[in-house]
Length: 218
Image (cartoon, rainbow, N blue to C red; front, top):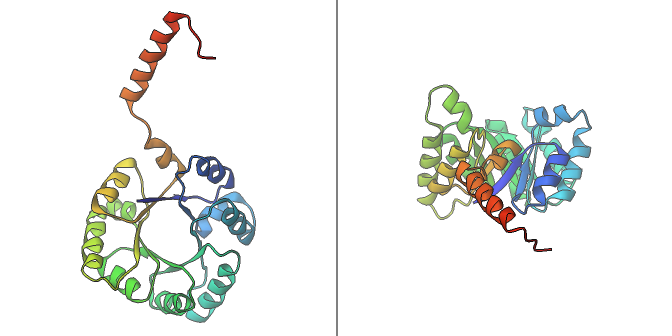
């Protein structure tokens, strides 16, 4: 499973990319707004840091403007994935851009029917928002399971399931067990994946025993 980082913080991306764990980045207007920087400049810089797909979202809601924005975003770098909303105009934009060989991430997916439509429109990625479904007492991970089942029924559907709105490590593990292709996580969640109290306890014991020997490897 691939790990994308859901942030527009260039410093965070550089730090985590050095671990080799970052396969791509997802951004949105809200995340970029937090940086206080120019949207296009931020996206271009992130594309230089990460080799994998970098999702950059259109801000228009009508087909013609979305298409124009999407084409402009795609020219920032070869690894830009244009993010469009799951609306009819968004799907029309997805179809046109994907036919031109441009990666498209269809976002704000909340049902398996929507995911099927996005795949038929040629989306490279579908972004189901599991956390937001959990927030309204709906099974977010159940949606991932349904999408995986549908996509696996049809070889012609090549859209990757990009699990979004991830809130905690359990979402990541459940996504991996269900066979999701990608999870996009905030930096804090990626860092939390490595934490376990028994790891900390074991390391502390090893270091204490080593200190008693009075030796040094260097």
